[in-house]
Amino acid sequence: MGLDTIQRSVLASASAEANRIVKAAEQHAGDRVVRELESIRREQTHRYQLAARAIEDEAARKVSRAKGEASKRLLERRNALLDRIFGEARANILAMPRDRYAAEMRKRLELAAGNSGGAVRVHPDDAGAFESMLASFNAARAADARVTLDASAPLPNRGGFVFVAGAYDVDQTLDSLLANLRHEMEPQLAAELFPG
Image 1 (tube, rainbow, N blue to C red):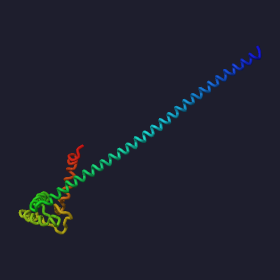
Image 2 (image 1 turned 90 degrees about the vertical axis):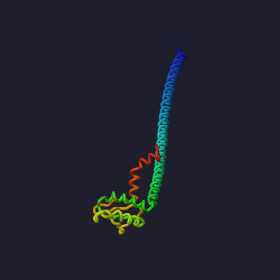
Image 3 (image 1 turned 180 degrees about the vertical axis):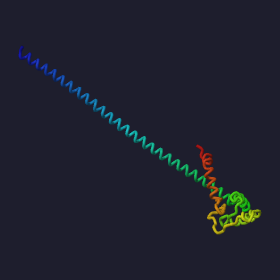
Image 4 (image 1 turned 120 degrees about the vertical axis):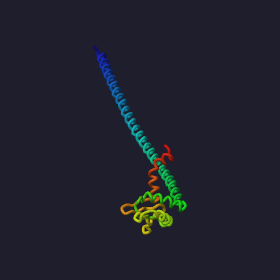
């Protein structure tokens, strides 16, 4: 065996070892590239999901805010319309002819007073209508069941009265009557005026 053969054998062995090392390095580098790419892909997917979630959350907040503002505007419009309706009703009642207004107040007083005596408090502008109505109202009542006009405590707003008996008061002011009526009718009115 000559030197030449040994040299070729060593070179072949070294070449084979070098090829194995290069293949191992290439395999290792390829595996690392795949891992890094997978890591980058996962990171980008995670960032995308976070960004998408943030966009969805912001969109949901904007939609919720818009719905809230729309609901608020609708409620304001509904309340303004109801205010106008009940304001017109109040104006119509106060614009009644004096004798018709007095007749309506007499019906309310009969219910409020029953067989009890007492006093009514009214706005000064309504005193004339009540004085004439009370004269006929008291004509058939016993002395202890009569109702008088209490001018010492006038009501601040025109319309209706407060019946004051010994142990209780009955609020029959127009403001209270309309507020109670509005409270009772509000769901029905809202359904009819604003369906859906």
